[in-house]
Image 1 (cartoon, rainbow, N blue to C red):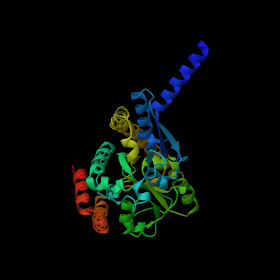
Image 2: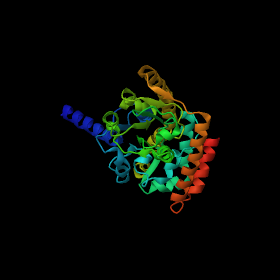
Image 3: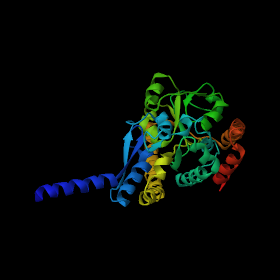
Image 4: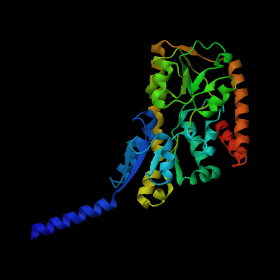
Length: 329
């Protein structure tokens, strides 16, 4: 009888513990890499700070396709996800502002701070609220550069007809030089370059490493400085609001530390990419001050078009000026 009582008591304790534990499903894609280390570190910190009472269950592609992560968040299919704004700029037009070509060579730590401030802007908060989403933290990326299999790039005119995979801001500028924005799934980039479906890809270092674009490339740019992608981590707002005070503090209070870890780790990735480029023997294209000035001039036109495009949907000029000021600081 005593043994039976003990078993019942133990079962009750386990049931209570199970109810007390909170598990969030997190939708990522691909595999663990430099791009996902902010989420991986966040999960580690949250579990440590709550003694295992709050866990982030990270899935790489098992919950949703990358371009459907925001939709999944909106219906509560999972509690946290990462996505890139240029995947569906019509769904999140406000945060595409950080993808515009501000022609500023800023550090990853500065990119993180800029994005965090943009995420707090009332216009941005309202935009994401349509998806029942709260922006939790950025995935800061350095300036994108191109690796291409095409003939040598000797002048800006050589961009004409070049089929490139890349985000909106960069391709907006290069499009004015005659480059053609081409959509190819991330996992198929190297094969597409190798087969001639596309001529090149504009990526951050981690993505060039992941796709090994440089293995089939002929040249690579070193100082394009036309921006990068905005790939935030978002949470379902209702799920965030339902967290206990302790768990919410653990989550929000771990963001800065997760980002610091991410930045330090990514800088190693950048060095690794530079080493791979040097070993590959690709021709490195460094734009002259005159060419950079021309790209900057075209950037102003792209920025103006963005402001005009969204002026009737939200205060695009105000949001642009706010973001520009952050970059200037």
